[in-house]
Image (cartoon, rainbow, N blue to C red):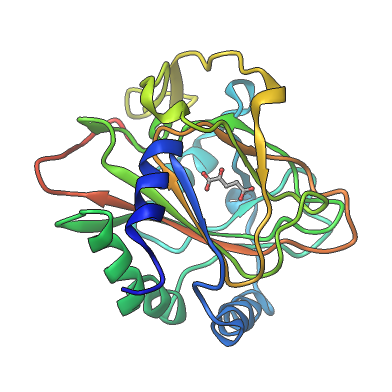
Length: 261
Ligand SMILES: O=C(O)CCC(=O)C(=O)O
């Protein structure tokens, strides 16, 4: 695959992330954006589906309906919302167009370049990050939520469907932070108990001055190592920052934790 060099792959292993500009075409991005519009048009959101996703400890789901909706979302099309969004329209979805993009030959070639022998898609999301509404995503490691034994088997594929800038909430990374393991896990609690998930351990304190912004143009793809610390700021700008993202796991010689949501 010409567009990812061995130097770039080495950089990914060194930093824990890699930005690849122009991985998807503008037309492919528009196809995903148009498809999400079709899915959300006219969608009714029943109360028990009004579930907001948060990486914060104190904001885990407290009622049974929302808890079940979240816990059973791994292999279904499910919708999660920004905080305070219910006077607006924002949803995320997954369907045939997204499957086509997820399994595109160039994505498969990228996975091979990363040395993944038996890739499995374990999760996918469409993130709207709407103007003024898109909230911050606090510093975290994806392995907190997608735990495997051993660690180091999960990679996020994050695709900018619009330009992602510092103003509208691009990703920020702590370069090299993927080599120190994790200190926090989100695990299911005993079935039937509320909340349905709990954090075991706590997130480290991070020096915010060490994060670097990684703005990227429409069609750009960012590889996110499962243990690299990353975040995004609230979108206080006038422009949206749509993203389609999914996680690949190397299934070979890997145990997917049964405690994962
Ligand atoms: O897109 C964002 O703002 C955050 C995404 C993220 O943290 C993730 O996919 O792990």
